[in-house]
Length: 267
Image (tube, rainbow, N blue to C red; front, side):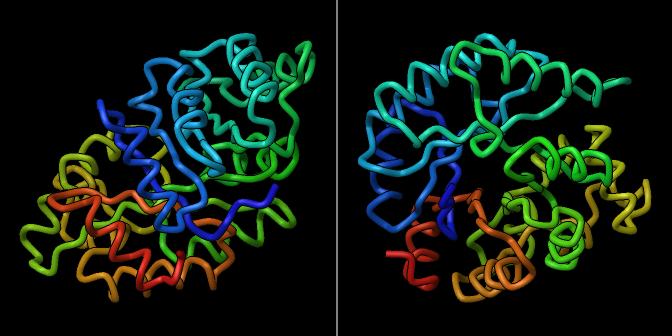
């Protein structure tokens, strides 16, 4: 599947289809809906029907919330009206035996009347076992809270499979404001076991994670002007990311996404 080098996270709101239309005009090739905002899979169809040609992706569908048969049915319906535009991003539950549960879930997708093919599904993966599963049974992996160095390492682990990097960014040159804009989001994510384990492997102490230390913010969230953030996006591309999903946060997020598009030459 041709991903395009840059995707964009779309905020679910009353105007989210018009958001996506503007982003498509700016050269973003994929619109991503965050799992926490995915109240219904019908949102995917709304974006597909409201845009011209961009891929619409889920980042991610939590497998503990949406049964496999529901995902397969949504995929079949959308494939019938807009073939090739739904990218199924999945995330396993944070619980024991989650890998076996994921295998069982994939088996159900494979056996559906309209199967969700491997080349159209991606797995949220950070640890070695999830990355191996992404390589074996998915088109690739979706990574979050990563550095370009991690992207290079996971590129090796994934082999020929694709890598999508979800990159939180803040368009603000003031350190205090920029860090504050993302601190609440990071405070939530650092309490999720999989992300916490990943960040510990990156070298962060428990105390740094608990207080969402400035070093943590500065390491995993590019902030600054468009040139500064674009340079970090390019570092991930150079390290082996097939697509970088821009997830802008803070004041003026949509305007900053437009600036990044210009600097990166997306349009």
